[in-house]
Length: 584
Image (cartoon, rainbow, N blue to C red):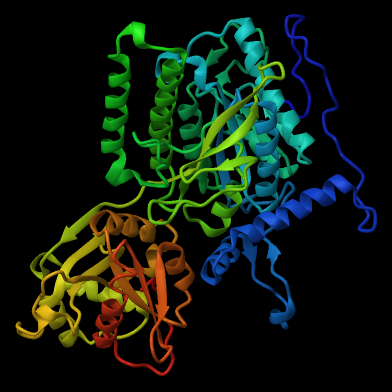
């Protein structure tokens, strides 16, 4: 059923070198740590520090991945990683944090080594990866489903699987190759998951080949067949979710040479709300593919063929992610990233947010080469390039969530005011001054954006500069010419945190408003989130508020933004202990 650092018993047609079943190295003395292990630990520490999580994000990560201190003097006790009981009598889950990884088997040696190092770091941070090895360039996965494998193709798939195992172990980790039975839907759940449970209990990373076979494990079995990777991933998602000793995966990671999904202008799509955006994105990719196919043959070059294959791969990745996330809990997320910039996965694991979403300015990752706002040029030595070095664009990652539906309201008559009031009070942890607040909204409301069933909401109003010339000839509390679009409230329900509601709302805000301003208490713990998404900020007189804005008008209208923000009255009743739990 499995190969644990051991080449499968193959006929002479498969000349693979056997190795020991398990490699149990002697424990290192704390005073005699090998330089390679020390370097790996240092790189992990630097990666964690580079994530720069906010206080809220750090607490969220610790709550998910650590057990609280158990000693009486808890303030002086460092939390410990959660450990699950093992052995014959163990009944609790081995781990709550399983990640499914779909890995392009044709990565260059350099990129595979880079990703293997990141994978080992994620493993040390308590994510349990299950790697499915796949050949993106083998053709359409749906058409290739259940095709019989010739011995030459089977040998190549086995070699690709053990190449990944070797890379993980060369990077300081341990891996087990699962090359027979795990991907076979005719096998029982027990027999399919047994190799994965064994790997986890041994502290190894399971690596699965994308083909099935009969129970005898013979590599020359006539029943060996190729299995579409999304079928393996969906099957694993369903089986793991119903397995009390394992649990539902929390993350899907798709790793390729290119990076995230791109739009027609070659800009990276940083964050995708699948429920709202999938159909439009799929139609866009299909249209782009048809446009390329329609070009006259004599105008096509090899680069055009590569672009066509790349578009097909992007569309396939989008479809696979949608299908897999549909089988996972709503809190699960997916990341599509290049192997060269895979270190960003550590930041995503800790902060649980997009690294470079459409709601923020593009970040530059530390990649060998030149950093471009939308992509990075990196030096690549291809696996089959025979030493030839080429330049290649590696794009930023794309984060995807199943997401929520979005509704927009431009009048209070279509808003469920009791539900919105409940959301605001739960999010801010304070009592809303309802009569005054809703009366102001009736005069100033521009839009209410609601995510799901009031899982989150943003309220944008039309404000005005009290000193603007056009305000002198109009009645108070009436919309003025050239109004200021002001983000009055931005709230996420406490029960809906961790499923990407904030990013979903912010992406819609950025689409609807080219210029936006808002204020936040100076002591608000989510100000780091605002600093990342704003293009400017100013501490207002009195040091109680910080003014934020984005858009080209910000600098020119800074004084008007300031006066308008200071003129807005409080929305919540004062309390002795203010504890805001929202972004707003």
